[in-house]
Length: 244
Image 1 (cartoon, rainbow, N blue to C red):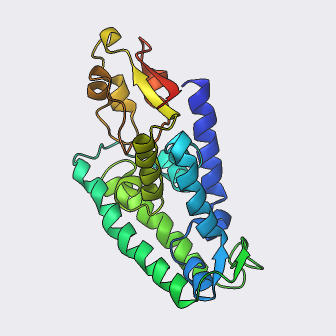
Image 2 (image 1 turned 90 degrees about the vertical axis):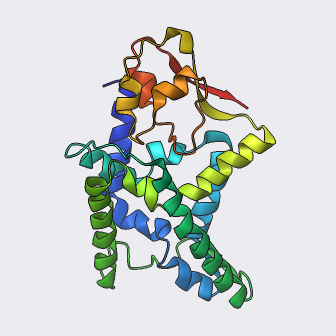
């Protein structure tokens, strides 16, 4: 394992360990909706907005290096590395995201707009669910969902099918492409490829990376820029670049 992958995996596993705390800002429901009903711009909204803005220049780097759910799914790969077979499953998260986003906007307008900004809204005295036991149920329900999806559908199934944060970043990447902004991405030298398929095997998002490398089309909305393909390639066919 390369040094980069050791650092990356250590980081996302650490993020999973502190998930009981960070779930407050990553949750699609509580306390996000409660805050919006009261006209409060909570930390979750700020985080989601930042995910979009950062993705304009760094793509889905959050998914590869920071996401708490990624840490759990990385651990689950010790149990199963089944690849996701149908790319159409990635559309499911948009059927979840669009009505959810509409609902958030409805609450926003019903509250008469934002009346205050409170990054820590919903976290006071509740860092580890001491005062509200129902949050235990929510937390472990999310963890169980992520694990079951991984086992039943394939690796990183949560990212492909359910994640409400991924669409913000996919939208950011597509916006960056449309505006031709310089961004972090992958590039390939197809003439050096020896068809070993190691890049496709190691890809945590079940992408056909070898075909992408051969056609020199490394842009894929499900690519999380984790660098597994970069580090495993014996001929260094794939590398990072920062360009439009």
